[in-house]
Length: 263
Image: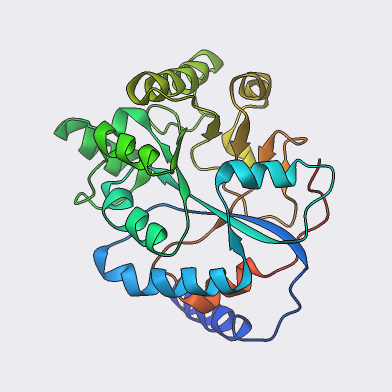
């Protein structure tokens, strides 16, 4: 079956499934993550957030981590947000709409992308995140403004390299230099890390002791019925983008997770 036909059929199936009645669990914590948006995506993003707000209480990343690591999950359904890479539209569009809807987020930034020169910007977009050349990075001042408004910032390596494709020494350098840059430039602890591309195959298992030591929480980019992966080291996140149809996000967000919260 042609790829285009598969995409059309998948879109139709998700749209239908997202409209169906669903029995929503009484206790649930969801970690949603995305990357970027355009200004014209604002109405779609607002629809998504209103739908989620009708089903979840919005909490910070710190609060959500505390819930899933507690001995018993509190009553209620909770949602938190994060956005990867460090695009300027996170500051221009995403953060203001989150604020408008009573939500906060953690921004995982590739630190060498922040305030980079033109040559590096093009290399990063073309070779690391595969985005349009119109994309711009945030500045450190923007990130300081966000943290001052109650948003959080985490590390996403320095250069968005695949940590399974470099040697261990380079992977460690990518991780620790990103953490140091955030702490030095923003004057705050860097407690969280998400690894680029976010699949199990994109992280060297040998890095897990370092990540456990250096960060209070580590995040994948895996949609999973399990809250944790890598034997409890990583918290799995559910992907969405602000431009998605609200029915698609509803389908993924209201599915029941397995009871593994305090792994």
